[in-house]
Length: 324
Image (tube, rainbow, N blue to C red; front, side, top):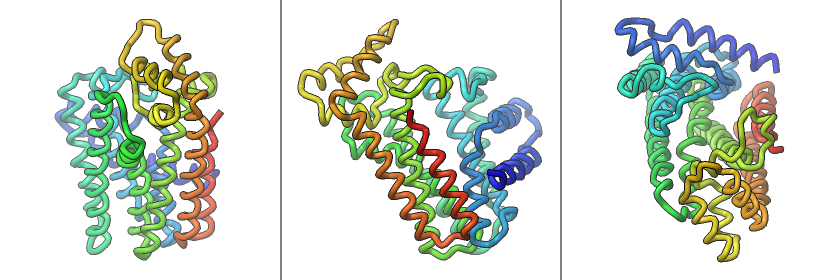
């Protein structure tokens, strides 16, 4: 997808030119470090595509795309501290490379910078973008807190799990598209439709990650499977298995998600078996398809330019066809 590569290159150039490189170095170097780790830059690219699809111009959306990406990386810095993670995108996490205090403070600075980049806009465009961005930021904090709360709960209701992943992951995908649409001059109905497309795509993507973490191909994923099981994460598979499994298997699953064995291989294998036998694995695949179908229905309503419509459809299909 050559056009997507062009958007990514334009964004990377804008990012490097606008990252702060000032003193104190221990505040700003970690920001440049985490933001320069690479990644697909999915969210800022979506912002650029959306703006281009309504106005014919993507360049005007670069500051907003930077807002989305810097905020996303801020959440990664703080998530890594909360999870005590040592590796991010194959590199040392910020709080490990520097220290926890630096990670917290640099993360705080990133949040402030994300808001500053939006000040490039004026009038109604600024007001609408700022309102939506602020609303989404708070929802992401709520989602992160729900995720933390779930770690101490034996049983998590499916509706609560879906709310958590909607807030923690999906709303920022929707926001990236919606702010691009606002900058591009889309009307209110178009803004709502493209947001819903992104949110539902984000839900499908996160549920697919749940599935792949347990049943994916290690050689394709580039990591060992079973991480969520080892960490006792309450995913869709876990919630659905408790709904569908018989009492014996449900009790065993609850027990498995209270222990941290030195060798987790038996725990992983037993959990996989319960997920399959209960029907939770098949249900997860069906729900991934359900949310992706909903996403594409919303895309059909958003009235975006045909070229950008095709790009978004291609990106959506690529994101949700990784199940192996």
